[in-house]
Length: 230
Image (tube, rainbow, N blue to C red; front, side):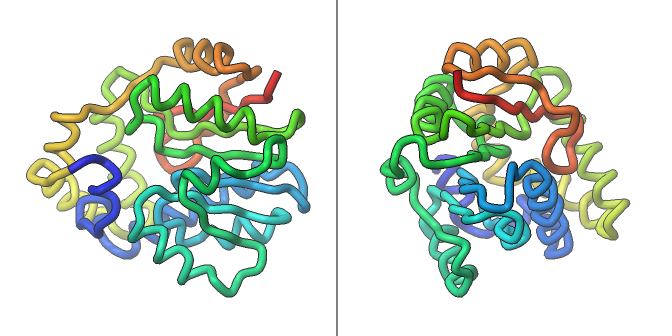
């Protein structure tokens, strides 16, 4: 099993219950919506997951493309948003074939930790090609190396307390220790970056980056970076 295979099927360790899943995606969608540069912007959310609240982003832009590698998740996205003319769903290969310099904003949120450094570099090269010269690359949920698991657990508990699923979050943290996620984390690992490391990596990929004041999503111990092509 790899990370794509893991996320292609429903697991109780990803979201502790339906309430967690709903507010998770609502929070992400609202944060992304706040970054949309204009009402007619062409936006691509790459590695979007279930994206159950993505219509909130589509309302704020000209067109939203959801890109997802997991085939079952991608099929569910196409079914969920089939009636929305402002939304489309693509595989990574289809997204890579998008015309050069045609996208105003590309979001890669909570994906980089599952990629090797080489995979991330290749993805950033693709994004730089797809973005308009005035476009923005939004790189969200970058995991720092210090106490990442501890802060993730504490952030989940705080998020649960604020949104009515605290005890479910406690149970979810226990389940994850016995799950395929924990096994994959030990065998495949997660990529961690300091702020300086990621700024340097983005500059090397041809972007002018800065760290955003707020990370997309509920975990404010992680980082979001906003970058322009140069």
